[in-house]
Image (cartoon, rainbow, N blue to C red; front, side, top):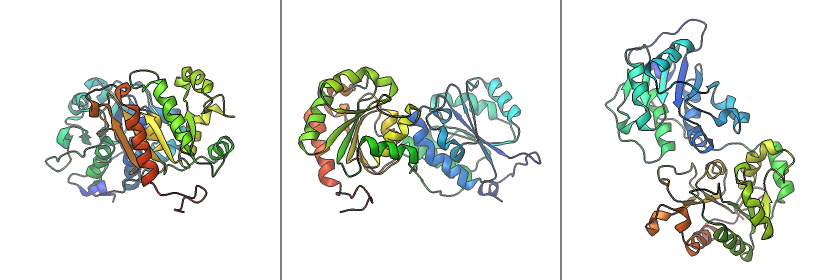
Length: 351
């Protein structure tokens, strides 16, 4: 009997069909999905005979960027689902078959319809609501939520399982991506990855990025700009300054570009990134991460790595990333280079 059935009121399912754990999301972008990896892995471990189904109100990177590892995490992904409708969600649950657990991992304000939709149904329900107070058929009176989203979602898996579970964060490198990463940046070459992110409200400013790159170069670390498909407008000014760029035009297979960034992060001295999915994605490897945080709550959205530094615009009375002083980012970068042990980039062991 799996851990979940140790709670009061065992729920029977149709014979011949796997019981279902249904996770409800809104629009699972790269950063959201990465932060939920420990939760999905914990569910897979605790409920090996269940099918994990993710229903999204919009899209999901599990069918695009992260499709290569989806089967490890999720059995089925459903897009464009009516999750804000009580009747629509009830209909979805009935259509899916033997749903035993519903976990609403969306923001608190989106969870009320699912709480109402699951009332009275023969299943267990838990929402990522303050105190984990929205629940059906799950023992307990609630508890204070952990301080980060990744820990909150993982704690939901522990609550439904009825026990503590491992918090597994490391994502293996794709072999093809590792080979391409070694071609672009030779193994043993000390470098710092720079990810400016989209040129919108979280953008630090091109002059500051170029100044930081020049500073890294003077310190003996090659600056390498990591530019995603949505940041191609940045290529011109970076290329004009003479810095190396890894983007879709530099790689042999643009489809694995995020995985190339992932492989590069495993060898980087540090990755400096604006608040973006890429910052969370590279945090699944061993590099130090320096996040330049503006409008987003950096503590709530902390990456799943212990090697994390951050500069918040709030430190300077602003919510705009562009107001972070260059000299402060340089000081934090110096701190990382000073505090991080020198590693043999071939073995990952301290020199």
